[in-house]
Image (tube, rainbow, N blue to C red; front, side):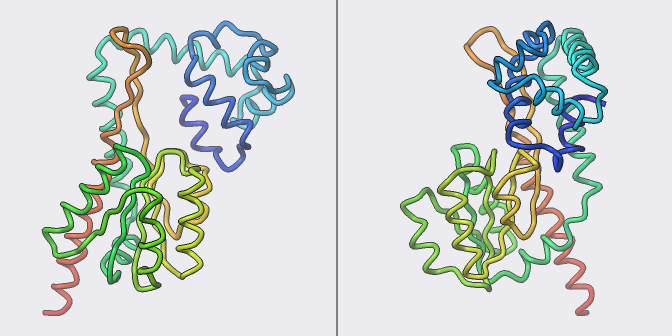
Amino acid sequence: MRLEELMNQYSDRLSENDLYIWNYVENHKKQCENMTIEQLAGKCNVSRTTILRFTKKLSLKGFGEFKVHLKMENDDNKKETSKAVKVCLAYEEMMQDIVQQDFHEIIKLIYQARRIFVFGTGMVQRTVAKEFKRLFYFVNKNFYDFDGITEYETVLSYMNNEDLLLIISVSGEGVHTIDFAKRAKIKGVPIISITKQKKNSLAELSSYNLYISTTTVEQNIYKGRYESMTSYFILSEMLFLRYLEYVEEKSGEEV
């Protein structure tokens, strides 16, 4: 099992320090492959014991086994020459996961909501919010998208427990987003969150949580790494299709 899969499997065991360590390792995989436990601890500003505890929380015997996993994954990545193939394989894996999920309660919530307010915390997430609005427009289900802190107060004044709030984020940890979600929850508004990271503050506040995985590929033309965010759009379309199925079933029951 790959390290990212172990992170997801044992996410409920992990602390903020553990997530920080993983974030560093994920962004410096090649360098970490040759580091001692003391060197990694120094890079992450934590103790040697903290690193050791982190690896054991992933059901590994220790730091040595963690490095073996890391080296094997780095070697596998070298064999994959096509960035496009890597991303497509990740999409295929995600779609297989989506097919197996039961969205019934989430779809039922969307169906019953008087109004649905959808908010994306970043540029891509705001585009996804507009995609939700576009898709559900075809079935006369209105999604009201809004931008940023300046509109929070207005939206909050309109919302009540007959509405639904959908928040699209990456980390689920934005201070203003969490504050907004808390205040909506106090008003009895059900919340659906879509985030990348499985353990986050927004997910804990939400009535239902959906998770996406992004795929990162190395590239040498520009600085930094490219992260594909198409998973957000795949999920939005799958929810729309499940909604169509739900409405069709409801129509059949009424006949």
